[in-house]
Every structure is written in structure tokens, then in C-alpha cells.
Image (cartoon, rainbow, N blue to C red):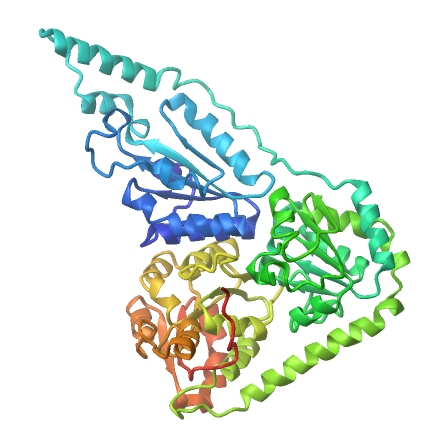
Length: 557
């Protein structure tokens, strides 16, 4: 860290190790570069496991640097000693230990190359304490004696000198710092032609875009045009939300399950048949299904059990879409061919929007509480058009995904398929660092915000003013609703209507409580927030909401 400071590399120190890795995860997603986190040994590494797994599942290239106990003392009871490699190797694409100073560059380059190649993911490099300090300090700490009389002392001294020389041998040699090019599998023209022929036969095509579509930053600026040239209806998930403008005729947000059952051709681009698609059972069993993915194993996930794979393409999803759009595919797909199909999808979309509007008109059971759906509608209206949204929570955030509109490409950050709570602060830190001039809004559930509260100190210390909206219904709603209906008890699911705004205020944020008593001023408060934020003031809105059944039945078994 001291060396980074000397090189004018900005260091963001957080209150918890997981937050640092979450921030590195989001930094990778937003910048296209590898995100880097650095933690202490032992407990510090253990505290990162959930965040590392989140990065793996989200396919984010993250480099975790960690300290370690001295190599010669491992297994002999030194402070914070543990087998860190064993702990992380099932999660990371690469987990290595540096034992010689001259190997630092080589092993870092290997790890970074692997992290960014093919399916991106986290990597781990362990740096024992002796590789971090100068020669004289290490020699002194090793206790090497100049004149040893006893035979056994001379043996030990000889071994320590050998270990010291081996550690620092060739340390002064120049190291390779040439640019690294990640390995990606290019799209085959034969695959493009096959998909083009399938599309030509289809009358009800559908395209599902996943986060992996956004992994290749060199292609992002071409994606919107490519999708519009291909010209078939799309559903976006994860990081791909916002790749199409909100008013695009090709973009659909609601009734995806119904659309998948009606489609006769389904193109999964960077998306997989996991629990989000009911393991493939959501797909029409009679449809042709093509999957484009960087990972061979992901292409066939659950295929043959719950769905039929017509063709798998192992390639970068963005490269495939661009090449498909250039294959004159639009010549064979006249817009009029899909007009009836598009109308069916749009009618289903409009029905869902009407259902949401009806829910905004319902009165809360308790007049002191807000209608959560109406609140989210007002948040969507008040948030600036260039805002980056971070979503951290369960039920409230799930509802928000139906209502809040992505403000553009790479302006929607959720944890990904691991469904991790607690990503909010780390993701917001990265978003504000990547785009200091853009507003960053975090949508929190009241369960999830508990993981992030101390990081409001990090926001304040590093002058990262963000806006946090907490949907506070005093419960873990997603579990509470299902558990009470099945088992008749809410044990373990009940929270309090806590004053989170006071915690934020203690860290120099403007904390505001909103409930039924000031409901009429909600719009005024929300409209004031962007102005406060533009003047460098962080804001937390603690919104007391009534429990909602909007997402009743949303459980994955």
C-alpha cells in the first residue's frame, strides 16, 4: 500500500474486507479492467469468501492480494496462520503463493491473465510477510547469527542464510510489464450462418441477454446497433440491463416466463439455464434453443434434463452478436413478419404495467407506513437520468427491478446469480470512483443495509457522496412471507423499524425518515435529493413501508 501511494495509485480503505472485494468486483464490471483488493492474512482472507464467490458467479475479474504468515513458520503456530490456498482454490481460477521476490511479477501476470481470459473470474495471490519487507529487516527478523559455536546452531544458521539468499536472489532484475491480452474464443462464421437460417424459419423469436454480454469492453459501444440490426424482441438481465434504451421497441421487461413458453426460437446470449430460468423448464420444449457463452460447461447447463439444446456456440457473446448483425440477417427478417408476435409481447407487457399501477393505488394497512410500490415509482421519477443504480436486498429490491428503469449501459448493478446481501456499499464505492461526476443511488432492503452501515464512514472519509433509499418494513420479507405461509411462524424473520437515518447522520450524511406522517411531502423530499447530492452531500432516506405481496410466490427450491 505504501508503494502504491508513492506511485499515486489511490487507495480506498474500507471497514470490512468483504466490502473491498465487492468494490473490486464492481470496478471490474464498470471499467473492463481487473479489480484489485488487498487484505490481511488469516481472518482477513476468511472475511472475503462470500465476496469472492459472488465475483466468481458474476464472472468478474478480481485479483485478491493477501498477506500470509512467514513461509518458514507455517504450521508452527505463527499469528494468523491458516491454509489460505485451500480455502480459496475452489472459488478462484488461480490461487498461488509467492515464495521468491523475483516471482512476484511472473505470478501476478499469470493470475491476471487467467482472471480476464475466457469466462472471467477471481484469482488469489498470497504474499507471505517476508516478500513485503526490505532485506535488512527480513534478515534481522530471521535472527541470523554471525558467529555460531554449537553445531546445531550452525546448521540452523546455514539454512536461514540459504533461505534468505533464495528469497532475494535476482530481486533487482527488471520484470516484464508488457500489456496482457486476455484469451477469447472468436465466433465461427459457420455458427453465424446456422443461427441466421434458424431465425429465417422462425416466426416468434426471442433473445435473452445476460451479464456476460458486457464482459468485452471493446465491443460495448457496438452492441445497441447490433441488437437493433438483428431486430428481434429482447429481455435483458443483470449487467445487460440498459444496453437498449428504455423506449426501444425491441425491449421487454415483464412476463418473460410467458414469452419463453410462446417463442419458437430462443437465443440465450451470455445467459444460462440456472434457477433464473427454472433450470430450463421455463423454455418452450418445442422451440429451437441456441446458447452463446464463453464457457463450454455453461452452454449445456441442465440440457437434456429440463430443456433441449439445439446448438451451442462457445464464443464471446458480444463478438457473436456483432457478427450476426453484419451477416445481413436483417434482409431475411422483415419487420412485418414479427408484427403479430411483437403485439402479443407488448400487450402482455402493458397488462403487467397496469397491474403495477393498480398496486400503487392501494392504501397501506397501517396509515403510518408507505405503499412500497408507489414509493419506488416516485424514486424512479425523481432519480436523475444519468444515475447509476446499485441494488442490495431481497423483496424490496426484487420489486424495484420491475419498476426502476436502467438509465443506460452499465448503469445497473446487482449482485448477480449468487444473490449476495451486503454488496451495496462496495458496489457504490466502485461506481462513484469510476464515474465521479454521475449520481449513484443505492436501493437497500432493511435487512441488507445492516451489512453496509459502517461503510458510510468510508463514503464520508473518501468524499464519495451517494444516495441510499432504504425500504424498511422491519422484516426479512422474502423469507418472512413464505415461511409464515408454509410453517405458520415468522421466527428469525422479524426486524425493527430502526432509525437507519440516524446512523448515516453520525457519518455526516443527511439522514431523512419518511413514513405515512409525511407521505404527502415524499415527492418534494425526493426531488430535493439530487440537488443535495450535486453539492457533495450524501443522503440516506429511511422509508417506513408496508409489507407487500407483489412478489408472492417468488421462492426458488
